[in-house]
Image (cartoon, rainbow, N blue to C red; front, side, top):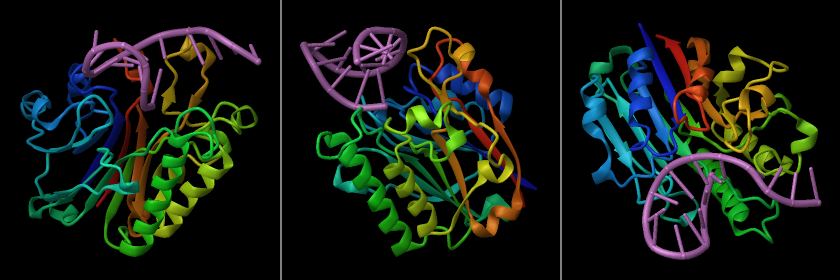
Length: 271
DNA sequence: ATGGTTGTCATACAA
């Protein structure tokens, strides 16, 4: 059997429920992790997704900003959200799959929305960048203390960092741009090392291949200029690395009607 | 060097 897991920063789940339904219908992932739902739990368009077979939904939403959710065709036994960096932002939710998931029973999926960090890459001058760094430090602590990848596990989401040279359209020109500064990239590396996570996307598309999952809205022609960044990630626990079978980056979704600025990333694990 | 767009909620603010 196989397990397919997708991640997508949707930038308002209410405005783009139709696009989510299109993805679910066309790609049928077992699990879809959403970020930037911008929607309190009691306004979440549950019925739109349940009717497509995604009966099991975990949400951690707030009014106006941030917000994460997991849509699943497979039942999960528990869902939790952890508060990183001591701010009660809704930026994390996890589920653990139940018995009905057969070979995937006990798999834990962590869905993150790491703070973007504002414009100025200096924690002294920019409180948002400081918050982003503290959030990452908290993730490192969590990784070392709890070893979330000691069993079968996935960490995914919009991590708002493009860590490698070929994760951005110009390494040189972005060295001072929040999302690709050496400080953040190093901290993301430490998050990965803290619990022995494997970058599933780079496992299948190693450097120097360029991989992007986000293109700014502030461009006359995003496809023509192609100034993208790889901000969205899927990591697996080390024991699952050998099961990573294939990967799809739904680049087309960037030109769907009224698109998100991020596109879905989907991996398939063989079990 | 600068400004470029989008969503939410009500006028800036976050991304």
